Length: 435
Image (cartoon, rainbow, N blue to C red; front, side, top):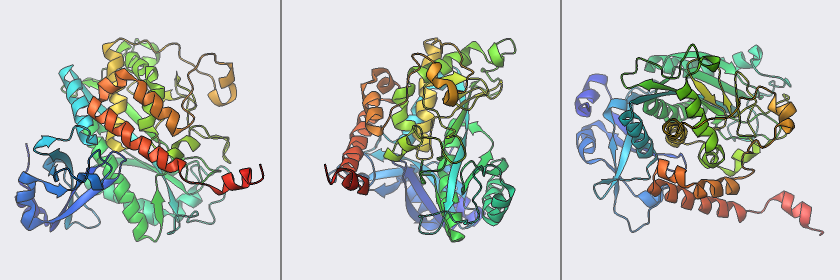
């Protein structure tokens, strides 16, 4: 049931609303709407030119309208006079089928029709750089193994605590903040929730972190590999399957292997079956493949997978089983679209449940040190082009995500790849000048 946003504005002291949508590349687009006009916008939507965003539209297309989801209103803790509203996008009175939030909502509706309620959480790693985004903001953050370093964490206390305070104000249930494995890298964890709520919060979290960093004179980035010698930004996703009333976790089974149910293993099987194909979505930019296929970093490990495998509580695999109530997918990175990330993981996992897909034997070895001993373990794509080819050729995945989205995503991402190939680097010049 939608809330009357005009009444909400008066009650909460909101003067302006950001009506926002996320495009295919994960860029958040917004219109700033005064509270005096929010009633009309709630009914008719805020107007956008779809071609101006990363959507599969042309300049000839009519105006696109973002209809705000009033149930997911977030009042900015650092500027309470502004309310943030995720929206669903419409063109000519019809939902835009390839809109990322729409793709996720359709998959969640399919899950519900099968008797499942999907819950998830994300671990969003980010770097704090100087205001130009060129180097680390903290010149004293130098340890070769900086993970959990108290000194470096507390030098950024003002910024980190402010973000955590905001999450507490919003009722997200934040429970820990830490300095991560790379110099200048941090992670903040909050409670899991229904998958759509997690996706909306993920989108807002990135905006919030970047804004708070700017207010402190820094620049925060979720770029997969912003510095070549350091661990990259992952976005590990934790997923659990519940019954429709949300009371019973269907992944738990005290008699199952590692405490997981047969359903949980089928879910894992679906993810593994399509692991190489979903990489185009979970790792969506050229830079992503500098993280998942990286050499050893200064800390001693990349903490990212390079094969399509699963394990118990072992962080060297694509999928980890950290407890008896969920799985962790370690493949995604910080560039992943918050909505498409949930959609592709949940969609392929549900496919695994429906098709009773067997995930194969669990591997408990250190894949970094002993991965060469494993025969026939599928490798992850080496670059974005390889990932897009696997994505495009996977007919099952196209059916899961919807043909409209799949075709549009492939088209726009291939354009991005072609733009990249038109860029000439200094390495190319130095390497080939005298051939």
